[in-house]
Length: 333
Image: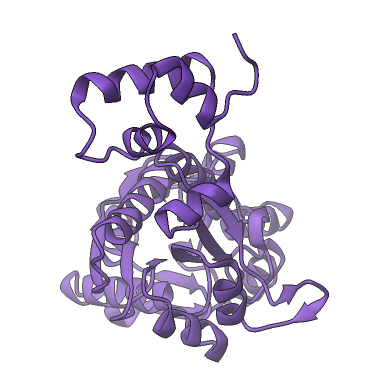
């Protein structure tokens, strides 16, 4: 047995040409089933992995995907929700034979645009996650990369895989209403964010349907900023508590909860609170958080599979896929 098998080793043992081995491993129709099966079994037996450069030359593909992950607060992989999504993307891409590389404006000690970086790397496709697509450099990337997918965005050039944000806020307000809460303050994320806009629409429409729109108030906060949420909550306490406070995400809810407890306010007896995302912290804090769950494994899988299918079938049109969310009942409502 040889430890570092090459395509020549596989060809010799199978008694075929290297061209046949290459075609068999790339599932080419010119190789009959019996020969292909034998070659694949030998490759698996010897742990054969094709040289990436050779593979790229043979298929005219890089077998790599670029990932752009950046936001206004520069949270990156410190953002638990998106860290989990990236992990799912990586697993799914690996199963399909692709590697991930993060996009940035730094390349070989030079400053470049995201598009220049993507072109240099020769990515087969790019996934844009947790990024403001209104940024001119991001928009340039989306408009000029043939195969591109976005998470929780809306762009006609891209495959957009989104959570049902409006449904999430409908669930939120209906749940609070069912518990008897009428005066609700929603501390949402940045207004220039697509997710914020979608959630606000869902919240306002539901408030109108429940005939409590005059009792609802909206305050701009900042995603994944417990300190910002703490400061806004302190201001709310001074102005007078509502029946319930809804936060933009679970981390912000944890900051709000800390502020309320430090001021001697009982949750949910004095005021109910809700988070969003359903990340691990929601079940770790006391009392446990009522929140909206978003399946990070599923969205990572769906966005990656759709992008790779688009690449391999040479279909570059944009479309939107929406994934469901669900209510997790905690102790804060």
